[in-house]
Amino acid sequence: MPKPFSIPGPDAAAFENLALRADRIGIVTHTRPDGDAIGSCLALKRYLEARLGASGKCRILLDTDAPDAVRFLFSPADCRETLVFERDAAAVREWTAGCGLFVFLDLNNLSRTGGMEDLFRASGAPRILVDHHLHPERSEFGLAFSETEVSSTCELLYHILRTFPSCAGKDLPEGCPEPLLTGITTDTNNFANSVFEGTLETVAALLQAGADRDRILEHIYNEYPERRIRLMGHLLDRELTISDKGVACMILDGETARAYGIREGETEGFVNIPLSIDRVRLSLFLKQSGDEYRVSIRSKRGWSARNLAARYFSGGGHEQASGGRIPLGGDLQTKDDVAAFVARCTDEFLKDEA
Ligand SMILES: [Mn+2]
Image (cartoon, rainbow, N blue to C red):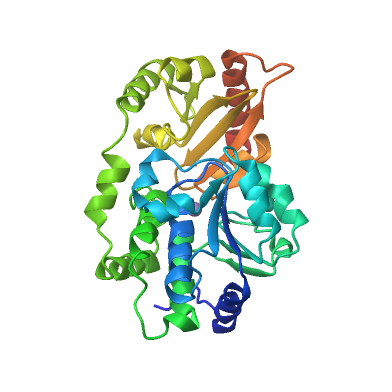
């Protein structure tokens, strides 16, 4: 069976040329980065350094810090060459001002870069996009690699790197397979969703190239802080509601998150759990963040998490995995108000979809 996509050689060559010409390269991903975001940034940085002589010329630019679970991927040099806007905006500003190329990974829209967005808009440097989300804003980027029939940005990046003229006849550089496999693992929820035939071929190649899957799994899934598991127990026992239409909803307010000492990223994956219940068709996880609730949605096949997010929660994403937000204010003040609002929205949505 042919691959659902292939990377045009001239595009890969153009990417490589832009990277070769730039004295400073900014490697950028979305705010609140996940394993795919961080994995793709690190793999690209290491490739550019190893094969295109870009040592010292690359910085990974993050709006907010990488989650603890993927810290094992960073070498001391990667740490020094990663600038975090929320911690040191001046350093990010300084780097972007003199930057000759930006590569955006795992986002479909510049607004996903959070507080850094204006810096990229103000710069005249070329922008390259590498992403697997629906509806990329192609006009924002000089060169766009966008595929949706792929597990992750890491999987797509693997094919781009392999198509670079500098990779012809060679294996990937040593430091690339591990972050790439990490991103594929986290974005597929450890191979539970969005796995295509080509994904498994890519994974086979990454294992052959030396990626240590056991090490990755240990770090990602067996090093959680205890508070995460205790909060999970609390939410499943006390906060999970399931409507008779099969809509599961769990809401974490700021007070409870503080009581458990929960940090950013530590509720990752909670939304998936109720989906394993037989009568659940849609699962929503809401987490308070200042004066809004962030909404994560997962759906079983036949129900569109993406449409639900777009219609009611100013969001979007993939067909079975999406996200959005609910601003507090007006009629929506308390957690109960938000729960009632979600119940009304999902009821209406299921009626219209039926
Ligand atoms: Mn991704």
